[in-house]
Image (tube, rainbow, N blue to C red; front, top):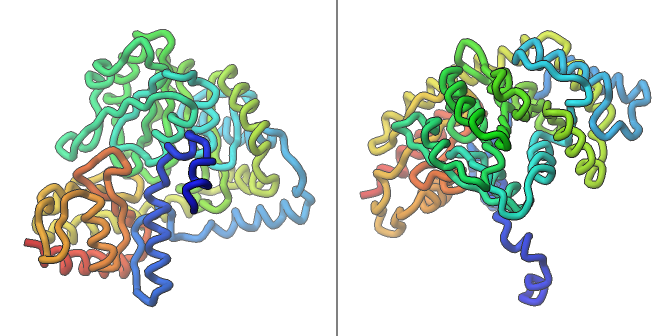
Length: 402
């Protein structure tokens, strides 16, 4: 692109960072196109196909003529199913007009912050965090305030740290549990402590991203919005991508106070309008039907998690904890900084990931993109065979560093 073309772009887009996960996925595809056998552990996408009964529901919806525009906040049938799901699984009570269905949970989060933020408003983001959080906040002219944690803290931010970060400009707190990229799960006690902090501040809101709810290895998922003192100031975001292996369907949703839901519907009405009609019909069917396929996927992910952790522990210098959800492992690799194979020296997590890509032909994502400079993310949403081979290659390549 020429200098003139770049200068013609808005400052908004010039300031925006490219998604690190999508960038690494593209680099892996480029290497494959050159003939290399690349194993990609960079994308947060279940390797399972969408369960057949959900696909059949979409096919039936197409045959039944669900090919037209839908109401901006979603088909009533789907919103009712979401209300029932929130009540059944999360002890959250919502009316239909508190539910907004979007083209993915990512759009739900964008709708929320475009609705809530004015220039200079601050959003406390618990780190490590999903790569798009900070860019969405900045797009809405807000200021992300990153509160970091470490592997020693199980990658969770304490209520005290949150309280210390609150200013008169703080508008919201944003986090995911189970977390992307760490897989950490905030306990009921930890979320109650955060709720106690939020309850002290009248105009402070919580945005809880629970997209990995069904990939949770604890006894039960807990939603912070079910706590009475903050239920009227919590927006709960979820979707179908992870728990139902429906990434390409682009179907997410949120439950919120009515005034926020109304604002998000207004925003979405000017951007995309409603999500696909037949996809929404299938989504309603998914929520109302047997969750056995979802539970089977969770079992498979748990088995892979344990296997990958055991393999990674065999690599000297690799610090690994045991995540309780999602399908990621987030090792601390600071012990590798300053090491070299004689040609490449590892100074940063980004250097580390580029080294693995070119030397081991394994694609992973730098922790810098997630607000954690000493770490990298592995997605174990891949076959056991691929995971074993990927870690073997990593171990072999990293052994060359001195």
